[in-house]
Length: 187
Image (cartoon, rainbow, N blue to C red; front, side, top):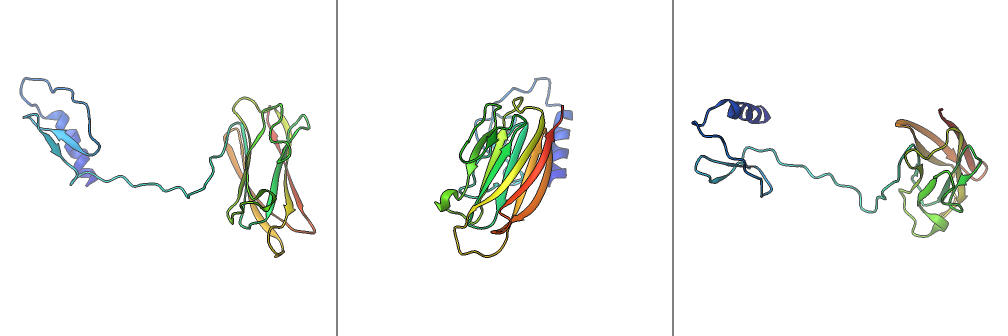
């Protein structure tokens, strides 16, 4: 079908339609149409591909991004906390949601076991051109269990630094409640 449409479009530019130029017509309707020689609107939906809808899960938060973006995901109703310390030793966390260098916590899931979800996300980012260069430290902390203890809690940390993405994994539990990951924003 797509080959047919491409051929039709290519040929339409090559076929002369008399000595008169084609009039410019704005598309005022959604869909697949053309205007014939008599100026009539012709529905071509039977030969045009249909658009597919992309569904985003209900309740999925919009995440801030920029020079640095750190996103934590896990699959329990427990309250894990994400913290990032910048080169000036300022820490973005649930208790300090923004720092002078521009770092911000914009999503904090399962906070204090209120409104819990089984697909939580936390996100800290520095907007474009605001992140200071140097060494950073990411911490994932098992703040509190919101359900009966079930052992270790696996998590995924997505680290975006100046367009380069790195995916890290780890676990936290009652005996080892904090996992740390250093990274550098190059000069």
